[in-house]
Image (cartoon, rainbow, N blue to C red):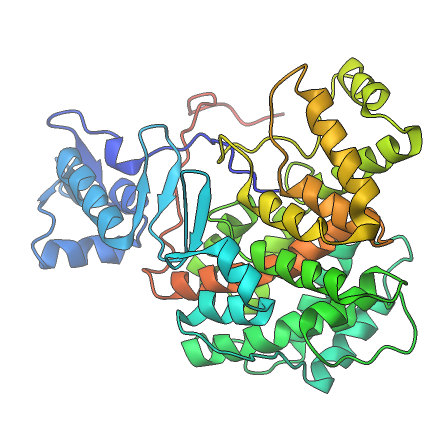
Length: 426
């Protein structure tokens, strides 16, 4: 589910640095990502030197000096561009290395195994343990979110519902523009349960109390849960709470950089999540798994996927050379669920069959597919689990971004179109 594809971008620090070249105030402001008046503030502080242009109508600036200042600003703000042109953002939240990942230095799989999703979220937000943490949604927020979600067409998907619920909850919160840490944490602790409460129930007679995983189960399955299934769902939420700068998380940080409130930042993440290369991966893995269960073998199913020129969902991850640690942790829990045995066997069949074509390990999407398929959940359930879980990470990144220089997520475009001036179109 974590797509972090390379993208083309231009580093202002490398732009127009020919020896002796002079830049106008406007060009300098654009390359530094600031307003023109800020350029003159740099001059007054001695960080830039200026010179009147030949016509005496404005100031010019040395391109090399501007490039050096841009590099310095990026280092100070924690935003840099790697040699491959990818944006790199300094963060204290998640580290991924050597086929493991860590939340604030703690092994994330161990954290999710021993603590509830709410406790994992609190650790991400504050870096402090909060045993027994619970999230409660205010009635006004839930009422507004449910009304908005109920007005959607019946065929609306889970992310449609969650995004509308977030917007409605924001409208019901007059203090949403308070970006202080205390206020944002208060928003976080009410928004996540509001999102869950706004989803339609799959089982009757359920009350919105208890751990978040219990409340979410009632929206995903009509079956009565057992302890092992609830533990697997709660652990899955914790495992998926964050995963560095996935596309949706970057969208959240861009919104937070512009000082959008937490509801809007989460909405930006939900918007990016709907991309077919990000959020829908678990649904594709679910359908693949159910096809294998229906046919009794992965061979014809994998053959059809390859014949159609499609990739095999649920396998491989660009950040891990070995098995996705999230999948490994979730498979271990699913092994203790007798009802999951057929789906687990089908998943192993998928991996071994696909290995004849390309040796790839199972990723968390395939593990989610085993969980959702074995618990009577629809194909979209994995996407719902992912979106609810990742809201914790999105808010953690928004909080971190609120402490950085505003509007730092502003790369410069590399114009490759027709050079002006061109005649007006007729």
